[in-house]
Length: 377
Image 1: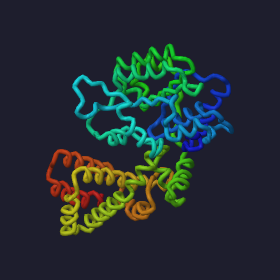
Image 2: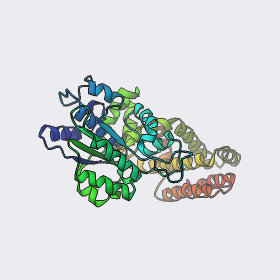
Image 3: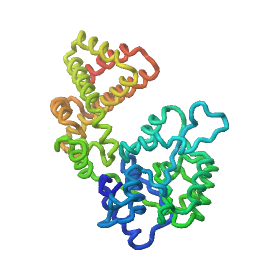
Image 4: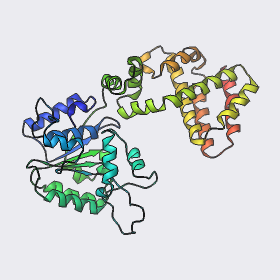
């Protein structure tokens, strides 16, 4: 993987290159930053840069034997460590390690270097188990790093989400960081550095990266996803520096269009006091599953906020699709300081009631009745 494949983070790439060029490469780095900023992608590109036999022009070459192996993440001197769960049908005292899930890990990496812990848990077949790193993992890492480099260069240990290590695991890793084997580089990629042992944090060089630039996300959406320029610009602004948020927005667009239509129907029928229409709307959305109903109510809260903010006529403060913006232009005058908080709290309370299994038809019909009053405040 090359640096050029990492979205944005131009300053961070240059800082990493300079560490190598100046001969000041630390043996242990803690790479952290906001969700979706590309920490793992940057770490993987840096590992490729270190292991490349012919890096030039500030990047790995992509064609040497080392890079060919790295394209499949099968380089013998690159060792991944990541949180795992206990495999099904394993004994009670079995301690799972990353190697148990090597196939699932490489399948996930093959899809790209941008992913979340939720996607990883789904890949290994769980949504409820707590993924951790056991002490056996530390023993395995120690054994691997004790061997000589097979290619005669660096050995890179890339640890994803080290904050999920058990305390005994962290203490064993600490010993390796304090006395690393020759030419070994630790890259710890963390979502929550504060959850790490202070002794580990103090023995690593902290490398914080910022959110991705809006222009970089916009360009990536156009170049990599084929999104039209205007739509890419709106999505990039809404993502607020997170590539994962941009992808989530793409995935959610079809559902959000449905929610927008639901919101339009709610506000129109309530404003017109169309009782029959209000009742039919309530029955229709009551057919959704409860999780979808709660997502819809969260969307309604956002539309209330965007409508109120748009009254200030500052486009930089709002984050909407073109369809949402066209509706809000007409709806915004009905959302003001007299009702914005009550409208938002109404949606929040409804979501709470849905979560407690209150009858959905009653909850949603009550919303229509209250919106009828609030829009006239």
